[in-house]
Length: 207
Image (cartoon, rainbow, N blue to C red; front, side, top):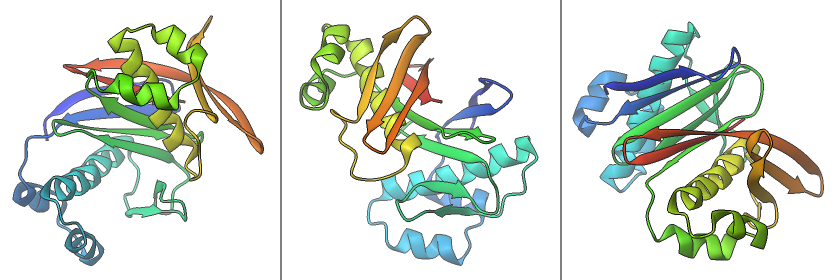
């Protein structure tokens, strides 16, 4: 997994992106799966998803090594949100067929997503975005991709299910750049949206 990008957004937030070139067999050699890994892999039917799982664990292990964090495994809470076992760090992962990204935050919630701009995104936005968001995009494919990825990143950051992308996750421009809002009856918060070009993809972090 050649390292493509290694960057800190602040003293609290660090993200890395790898170019995913290995086969499943090569990834198995890299991470030396334990019993839980093999059980998880046995329940994954598609090779692409197996590759994502292995690459994700390898990426987190490498990042912990650079951050000088003892890696004791990845666990998920009752909502399926991943976290580092026995650590207070917040984390988020994203995959494509070509790249894998991981972001760590020392204390604050974080979310990451990566997408390739494609015309099909407009069909998704028309169903999952409010009028002000669609007006901001105004047919621009890059903005459309950022909007969709930002909503995905906010969803990962919040980490709970039963979230309505149209009503509860709002994204748009501000004097501070692009911001994202989570607007749920029992939870209102605002986050900065960071955008990074990764070759033909756009990577978005909500923090």
